[in-house]
Image 1 (cartoon, rainbow, N blue to C red):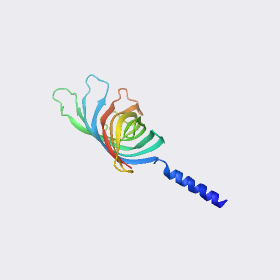
Image 2 (cartoon, rainbow, N blue to C red):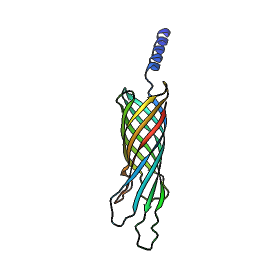
Image 3 (tube, rainbow, N blue to C red):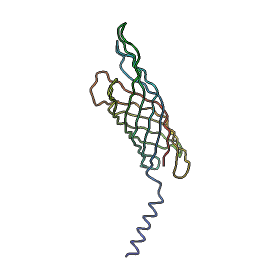
Image 4 (spheres, rainbow, N blue to C red):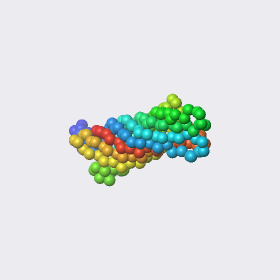
Length: 192
């Protein structure tokens, strides 16, 4: 009986190690631009969004041979220039502000081939700005991307992922004219 149990445990162990790696961890950086989507209002200030950067720690779990669940935690920073619409004689100097978000993506990734994939899903946004110059971005957003994964070794891979993210599709506060950030960029990272 002991021999059969030992052989069964040995077989299960070998079978478990021979399967494809199910978990994947990574570190990514991203750069791109952002646009502030808003309802045009007469007399409102002018908003110009600029360059945005991101830093991400990611996790992916294999669900099926071509399907993965991706998540992680991202820190996003961009600049916003606000040009006030004030009466003549007032200070109308444009002012720059930093916009900071922490967000958690929950994406599904479909691998078309060994090297190319498509990912999409939802984003849970947390607005961490102390100086609120635009609508609070805390809420649920969405994202989509098309990427490539290049193996450097059996363990290490490089990912390149152009993407589009929209923040605050569903906001947790009730603004009459909510503003939403739309990001486009390229994410580059190392996964293992």
